[in-house]
Image (cartoon, rainbow, N blue to C red):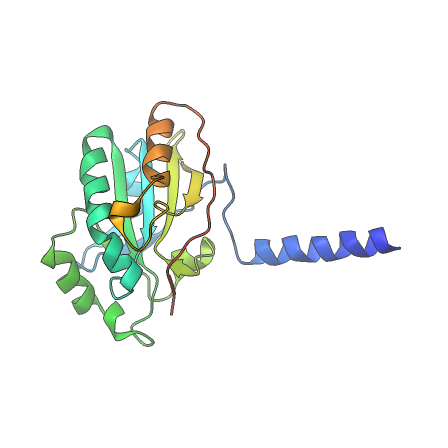
Length: 198
C-alpha cells in the first residue's frame, strides 16, 4: 500500500513539472517570436537555425546579480561569436509589475554598454513559462541538430555570482567548449542564483 501511494505521489510530482513545460535534456526548443527592445524588430527563432549553438540567457538588467554578470556575458558572447555560438538575452519580467522591464529601459541599458546580442522582451512570459524559468540570470544551451535547437545544458554561468575574481568553475564556458568539440561535460544542471522574475 505504501509503495502504491509513493508511486502515486511521484506521478503527481512529475505531472506538475510537465504542466509547467520544463524542458528536459534532449528536447527541442519550440519556435518563438519576441520583440527586440533595442531596435523594435521581431526576433523569429526559425530565422536563426544557422548556428551551431544557441545560448539563451534569461536576463533582467535591474537585478543586482544580472548587473554583476553583464560584463561576463558580454565577454562570453564576443569570445564565441566567431565559433558560431549565438547568444540571446530575454527579459522575462512584465513592465506592469516591474517598470525596468519596459522597452525604453531595456533599450537604454542595452545601448549603454552596448550589448553585442539581442535583448528580447517577454512580458507575457511566453518563453520563460515554457522553460520553467523562475530566476534571472538563468541559462540554457541548445545544439543545432537537423535545424532544430536541442537542449543540452541548463545551469548557472559560473560558481561566483557575486564576484568575477572568485570564479573557480566556469560552467557555461566549459559546456560550450565541450559541445563545440562534441565531447561530454560534467555540469548538465546547477542551481541558479539570482532574482525572482515578476
